Length: 336
Image (cartoon, rainbow, N blue to C red; front, side, top):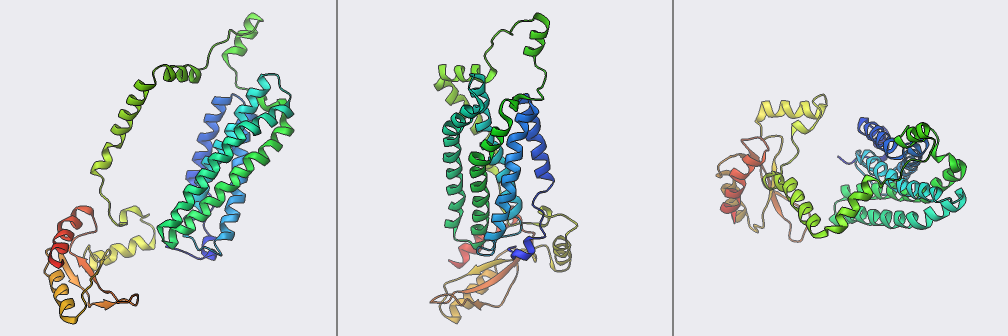
């Protein structure tokens, strides 16, 4: 339910899911970079950018009201893209240092190469999120503005705040390293470790040698993973999607026990009937449909012209896709 800015202030910016995501990202980055400093830079940059993005989201809430989950949604989006964008630049910076560049030149080269990719990717995400505005629902407009603001701040932080961090760290980007086989080889033999292509490089070469086979295999895997969507059933939100300790869940259970399982999820049935006789015939047809428990007195909407009559329709069954399919189609057939 959409809430005011004062209501959203009580919503925490981060939840358990955010903490688990940060921890998982830290482990993966530490294994990939092999350095605590290199691991911490993308995470610190992303978290600081999220704070600024959430502040901007709260400010925009005074102009575009948003639901209370917008803060959590924006934080998750910002965490993902923030770490990703900073990861691009840090990786390029480390490669430049390895090629004997000084820290300043390495930073400049990283921003002029990976930084351009970050700006392009971030702008694409912002435009895609703002596409929710075209849905025409005020609820989704607030979500789109809040998430876009957070992504915008993380993108700007990746090309401004992160280079400043790199300027302070310099060659210390590889400090607090994870022991690797190359270090053990150098300690035991006294010489440099033999060069070996990374697994990602070998995989990229394999894909380039067999592009057609790779495309076919990738499409086959994606189709297999997407196959369950063919049997997916959509339905209104039910009690089981809410925490059982919430008052909304308890009230839904009490109403369902007292008035029937279909009371908590009525359908709004609108008609174009222009006269009282035609409207009465529609209500009678709706009431006579199998699975319908009760139909309310017709109401006339204020939008128009012409105004649209509508009724609330209650079913005998709970709001699940199987039950809806058994009576919504006969209802449509009887009233058209």
